[in-house]
Length: 250
Image (tube, rainbow, N blue to C red; front, side):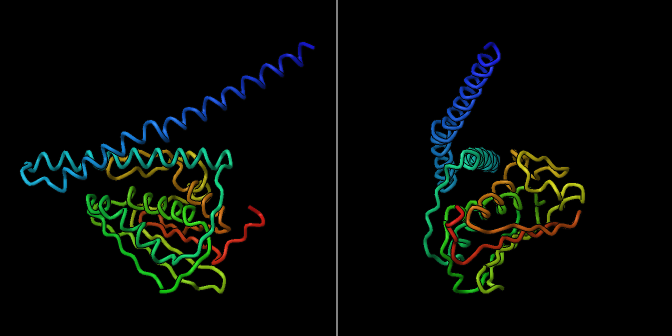
């Protein structure tokens, strides 16, 4: 009976730890993110009206903007990780032009890329109509863009291209001119909490979740991600997703 009692006690401890983890991530996603969002909005407002600030003050303000944006992105990834781990992501397919979504994703990253003197380029075919979950696709592309901008040195370019080379799929490529990955790192690219030899070029934080989340979100809508990388010359991440999602296995 003691063995059964011990097992029951351990089971209750594990359940309690899981509940505590969920509560901590809930605090991160709501209680902490909300004030950071307000500070982020305030820094943007000050930058828009910064006519009487010195060069040094503007520089500090830009650094604050990047730090807050980095913190918000890290929180978003932790929330995504929680939702993926506990399978709480429900799919809501809708029909839209993937080109329009890419326009929005790239536009959102341009201020950060500009502050790091990184060029963002977008090209795509017309009429890339898909019926899929927009949020999942957006999160996959956001994480690939964040990764490319985060690890690219100043003066480099990040290119995004989308087309429909297959009958039932579209393909989105995110190409950077960063350092690339070594051959022994490639098998671990999409594993969670991975750290690689190359570090962020602007002092940003890294949870090691970005590529894991990108792949998981793509797979959630029936897609896949591939990477072609050359150490010292950069990487190309290719996302292939079906034009129409199949929810039978979701």
